[in-house]
Picture 1 (cartoon, each protein chain N blue to C red):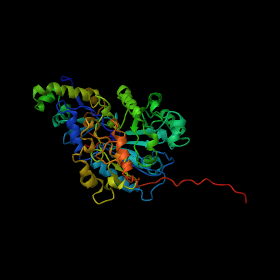
Picture 2: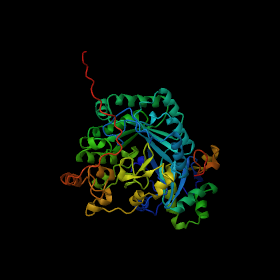
Picture 3: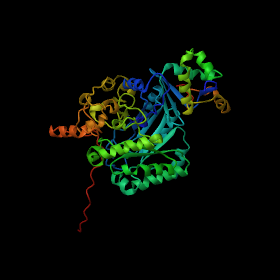
Picture 4: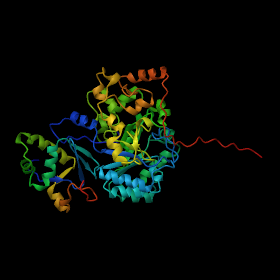
Length: 106
Length: 396
């Protein structure tokens, strides 16, 4: 997954929490816990980088932790919390990541 | 937790991080969050049905019911708190004339809505209207796959009503709604049939635990699953529960085996979920409509936020809880002492075992409560309709 180009699904909202964040997908109605603030930082920055690996570098994540981040990102991708950047562009919603359905940043 | 989360339905606790284990997350959630993950909001005590296990003893509308403006003000607050979605219930929420107005308002505010209904007010036209809305989910209550089993609990004709509503939703192309089942000793053998019914309608099955709350206090002893049936539920969930929702309500069953049920293994009451009742009172969870578990009211100064963040009750519930009588039991970590509401309404102390304790401690605890002549707490908001006196025809 490290070479993929990903972003937060446009229908997913993130709510910051002491343990990290809660992510809610308004379409699948799935709620997922992001259990560490570092994961939240990486997820938020995915859209600004060409690949997941680039985002990990930008967020200064120690390379020894990459395999576990790869696993977490993969799990988020498989549950539709993240999607391919190409899908975001195709649907014209590339700039609305992390927004609620009404367009309010939550 | 009903979160239901989930709660009720409550969170699918997918791991977002490799190093922090689920235990850590559960510990953090027990300490409470700045805002609920989701909350249940009973919009009205009015109901066309009189189910024998109704957790809110619904029937008649309460004249103190929140007005449309008050309800919208609460939604404004929930928006500010970033609550993702609310579970609307009742009574029968569709009885409220401003039902669609409030649902539209909530969704426009970015708060998703899931509502529970008996289906009586979903005709073809309403089904089309509902199908056209985004961020809306529906739970049709059904407690038996056949009319005999269902109607014994939910009232005559209620099975046919629910099925008709499901047909309307399917015909309108609503998509995946939920069929919501309270598991009793009479329908536990129908779990496979419920699943097949859900599949037939393109719906998702949701099963939850019966509590002795509301009118359930009177029917629980006759309806709650037997010990053998509890194992049956546990094994069914392990085998087939992957795409079945539970509101994480069966966590007390985790003491039955090594493999925990999916979901959050904890009580979320006052920590990550709560209930707002039709008159704006805030309770720790939908199953404890009683003064002991009332944290405040949305009508108080400071509104819902202040109740959630500062009430004495919620603060107390977020402190580490004592395992009490269960401390010496090897299963406590698995079952967490079970459900607070279930204990309370059968007279068991809150640090005692769950009445349906799978190790068998519940029976003794209930016996102890009854031999000590503990007066059982009664539901404090009984909106049941007055008993109908049969009309006697007389000749003049």
